[in-house]
Amino acid sequence: MRSQFTLLASGWLAIFLSTFQESRASTCFPFNGATFNGVNKPSGSRASWWCPPEQQYGFMGFSYPLEADDCGDPSNSFSKINADFKRMKSQFGATMVRIYAPQCRDASIWRNLLHAGIANNMAVLPQVWWGFESNQNLWKLTAQSIRSVLSDPTLGPVAPYVFHSIAFGSEPIGDSVDGGYDHFIADLKAFKASVAQYGIPVTISEDWDRPGIMSKSNWGGLGPVGQKIAPVIDVVHAHIMPYYHADRFPSANNVWPYFESYIPFLQANLPGKPIFISQTLWSSTADGSHNRGFGNPGENMANFKSYWNTIQSQCEYFKQHRVGWFVHTYDDSQESGLGMIDDSGDAKMNFNPSRC
Image (cartoon, rainbow, N blue to C red; front, side):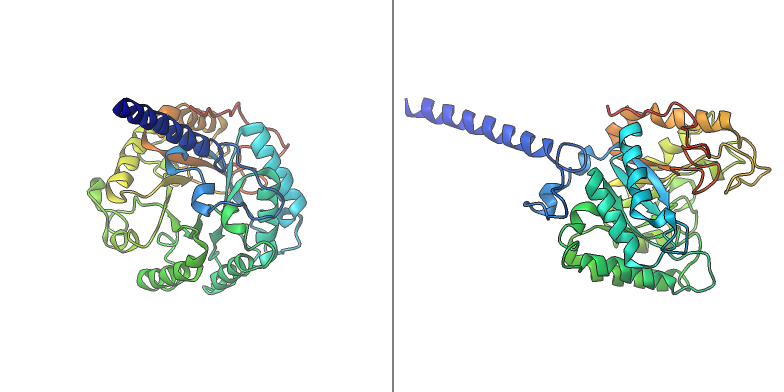
């Protein structure tokens, strides 16, 4: 009798624990029901707030350039950012926003982004930005502005619940910023240490397909710089961009095999690290912000649509491999040709990625 009771009790306990875990997962951020109460810090821990990496797959949202130097420019205002976040979520189902090229070096931009994330229950991925100016120390202003918001008495406590991860540069290796690879890696380590108390993962946003540097040839492993960076980063923000391999992919019609090679490479060489495709793109026009080289083939609306239809049709693959992805970019007014929204404010195509 006692053994039957024990068996019954243990069975109910297992059911209770299973239900509790499912309930806990169903109220995580930003996919499953967890919402902010103004700027108040959520009651639980940061770890319990965020949805687990297993749920971070498929379409996450948009890459959101903020390239106006003037912090008072309308594009850097809360009203503009908030309106864009609201549309990203309501029209396209975005849950995260990856910040790109924030030229405003003041803490005001991060305050506006935090308030917009809170207002729309969306995650924000900040970026420490070097820029393309000759002054290679501007990144320090951005890094300090992020830290000042994290230590702010009002917004600081809630910021780690909005900021998913921080990218220390966008293609910092490809652009050879900061006086060279070793100097950059030293600054990456120092920045990571400076925000460690907040529990926010740190990474770089980079193309790992750089043979001899980030990778070996033919996906044969990490290159010498990749080997040094791999143990420092907490998550992967990868730039998978067949667009810039116009010699191999003159059109967007057969780009998917590139993803099928790249993603397993990341998983094999950066094991245990959640993976986002933070930057992938195609231009809808030949006179856009970024050309392909090699004669710039395929820069037109037909290939733009083909590219994004391919990506949004692969939900099951992204789910199987637990990979999330962002559209670079949101709006043509930010980087012409690349945006999902055209200059008239309309979506360029039927873009409705499913959550499988």
